[in-house]
Amino acid sequence: MLHSRLRPLPRRQHRPTEAIPRPDFEEEDGIDDEDPEDVFSAFLPHLFPDDAPSFHGDPGQRLLYSSPLYGDLEIMVPSYPGQSEKRSEEIAAGLSGNNEIEEGRKLFAHFLWSAAMVVAEGIEKDATAAAIDGSQNNGIWTVKGDNVLELGAGAALPSLLAVLAGAATVVTTDHPSSPAFAGAIDYNITSNVPLDLRDRISAEPHEWGVLDTPFARANRGNFSRIIAADCLWMRSQHENLVKTMLWFLSDSGEEQQTSQSLSPETAIQDRPGRIWVVAGFHTGRAIVASFFETAVQLGLEVETIYERDLNSGATSTTDENGAQPVEEVRREWVPVREGEGPENRRRWCVISVLKRKSLERSA
Image 1 (spheres, one colour):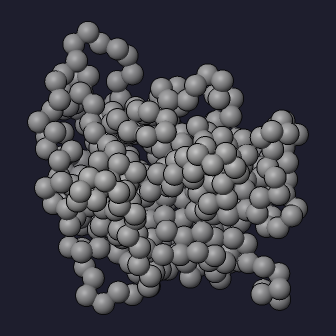
Image 2 (tube, helix red, strand yellow):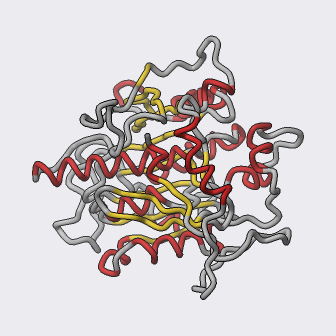
């Protein structure tokens, strides 16, 4: 299963008791043994196969992501000042009371989300297929030669896989107040991206819908792949999120921008711009459906959409005989699913590919 790729690393220090947990970046002589709670959490998907965690890790914790193609990646989960220790209760309850943007981020901005793992796995699978047959693979997760933008990146796992898989450039972004900029993104880049690829990946603060910043002005229409993994939980931000997508997405069709700074080997080769939106249903299906309605109203078109079982499809998963890989389980996307509730929706996510609405259809 997908979640079997992750395991917690030994903590470098005991859990902080102060109100503001901070990541520890320096090597220490004394490293704690594996925390019993971490060991138990790592086995939960095996103990309860009908369930699937929506998120992984604690603020400031280091996780090991096992990549069959690129080896083990050490991922630091962002920390957050004032994070409540009752994180599971808060997630289960969702956003109540004043649904302020900042309150939303305090609940959701500092975990490694399963949707990010879905994107990372997809990028790696397409890169593996291309390496095996030696051709330019054209799967939906292909990033080779693309300019890639990740929105609401957090730990930036998809960005790391994108640069390792041959993306021309990768820009990982999050809100300017995101805890990821307290060190987690830089740590994850320096820990996992070889020196000869570091100039292809960077991190930039970006607030959705704010398009008058130097970064936004310099990169309008510059990205042929945009990643949004579990970015839909704030309904009030759907319009701003779509505005950001439309601003940065390269034009569809033959008229692709090629950055002058890129070599011919890595330049975009007439790649139509696409947006990957992957989201779990931990805040309910209605809010996810609302995003797609907003996206279509503002000028995007749904090219592909389906639901995936999060407990299926990992590269390391085999059938009962331990032989053939188990393919991912899919089902049709529906905006309303009868009989669905918190107890049976967590193992599913929606995967979609969006593009600019064609002029012919919008005329």
